[in-house]
Image (cartoon, rainbow, N blue to C red):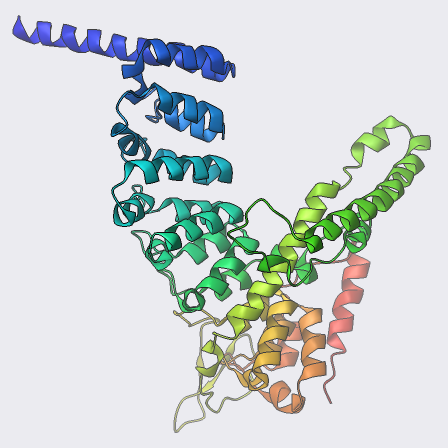
Length: 479
């Protein structure tokens, strides 16, 4: 009897809980914020109840909308000022995110500034405010970390400036519980402008490694689409891309304390973008007009590139290259070169090392490395010319680097048919003959790699053109 009464009380409690969240949730889903606010004015105690399955409260919902006025009005309902700090730093959702985490995620600096001002009023001194800005979610992410992870550069800059004002150290925000750095997360999310700003703030992040031993330069070497040389573009997209202005080198040097204001360079840039957009748009319209005689279906079938997307891509490419320049200065992984032993040329498929003191040839695996490749070898394999160029520019001697498979960058470039890397090596390397004469641990020379089709990916349509392409590689001559 007692047990059934307990179950009944739980059911009634659940019904009350659902009732308290259903009405405001319906109002929020219809963007009817007047009804949403009115409900909580009538039921102030419900402000602290979760209104979604993810345990978002009314404050989380308001923060996710970036509505500063709504946040201000909801906080105004709280009769006890001492509870404001509790709302902003202790009221969490299912993932441990506070209201400030939520604002940081959408990048609304104005809403964040309002919340920080309310925290300053409710905290006793800078120490308490600094701790409030350092609250972590279940992954160990602070609001600053979360802003950087989602590419909200302005928000990250603002929070960093506030942390500095109260005597905090932003380096305490650089790692989450799994030891993944803030820079790794920004790079993985392809937020290169944010990553570039972070690296300038803390150069030591460039040498940090994640659980698999990869630095951020390793990660970039695995992202061909992050660079112009390896991004696939159609003719029209390539034309529009070339029309857009370059990102000024000093654009990222704006004062982070003057957020929301743009310097003169930024205004000129916007004017240039507008003018170039106008010219490109006219050409795009003319191109589409050429398709009209073939009917509307042909026009629909052509999925033309969007200006804003191309502009964003070009901006991302600009910052990925700047990021590489900084990271390369901190990477000397190429210096740990494998000492190649005497190897006989293979007369078969991947069989080539002589057993010591005998003429017997011992078969070897294609790959034996258990540790990560160096960024230099990775970039040569993925064809990212920008990374290979910057490494050889900073450290010309890195060209002699040999991987654990006893392959140099020439082996790798030819193996993967990366013509741009091959041409770069020919231009940059003085003693090319020595690179070309090396034999890898399978007994392969560069000509073996030319003949090996394992990594061949056709770049031309049709078997005839593909055969022609391979015949061109077979004419490789370094002498």
